Image (cartoon, rainbow, N blue to C red; front, side, top):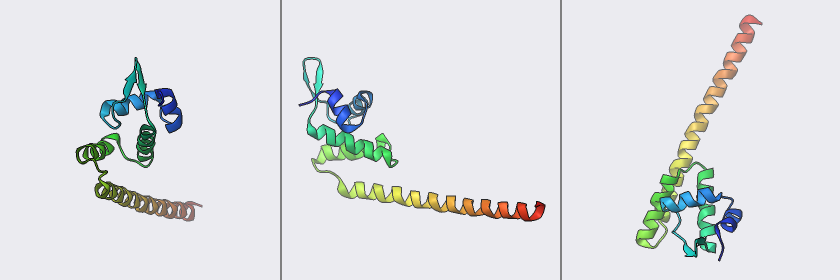
Length: 118
């Protein structure tokens, strides 16, 4: 059993973010002890996973779809999660290719300017 402050400390999320995750349905509404929310180790794992997802570019709405599917089927939709990750990685590789091309074009421009005006 833990309160929001301990969950925040263990997960690295702020209490405000945790309340947002609850409001969006990303984590289950916790039990209460009086006016205090009471969390479990499972909540720590969920918040940690949400934060990791955000850190690698997933939006909360994207993650919400996975969590809703899990709630409906009582199983984590691993195939869907893997597909989302694959798409995110493909987009990242495409972005990297564009950046590398732009970098090469800048290097070529730099060389041309120095050769022409140097």
